[in-house]
Length: 275
Image (cartoon, rainbow, N blue to C red; front, side, top):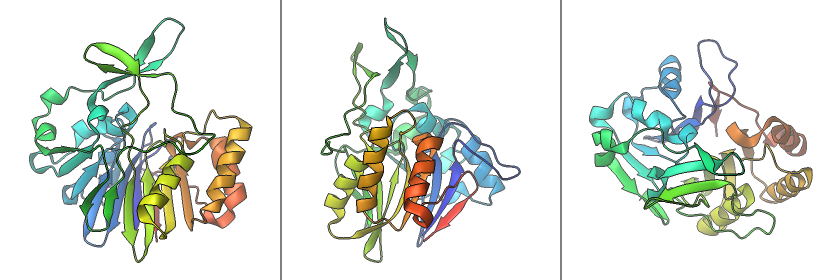
């Protein structure tokens, strides 16, 4: 299995671009999966520079409906023969973040009208529950809350039927790929909590070891106590390789690296993880 980082918040390699967002190109045997698309055409530019042919994508998985994960979908360069797209139905709703004391005013959802993208409407498959795309390639569906220190996200809102409702970001889903009796897990932002997500993943895969975790972990603004609890619980999963990206935050990345040592890889745009 190979994982190529097409979009992330950081870049070090010449000729590549970075932006606040995430996009991964995952190669497993003869299958290619585009996991998220960042917020713009950056993923496409980087793929071309890295020698990756997006036309060979078998599936597109949208982790959740925030602009920095699904905005680039409108720039997919082979829309005339685009692959199937898997997303939760809430991912296409208008989404907002609370920015002041009066109203949720900053749009953070999908930044284009689906009605203007016929190929997306034709190719999209909506997923709320666990689904096996094909043997050994799973989408988790909605992630339950089981961890006592990871609460539902706050200050996010969702527009439905003309009303603004609290957005618990139920649309976030994990991609789980089983490989040689083990499993690799991919998360966009871990809004439900990285430990909640891993606990649910372990329930889905049984006694299989998690050998790879590639994820935005949304730990940038958490308290030191919450971060230490997260890392302590993360260690219990005994994951062979942990790759924190995107919204994890520099402080959290440093603490995870300090605690996990060589089991944590600090990566950025243009890097490839092979396992």
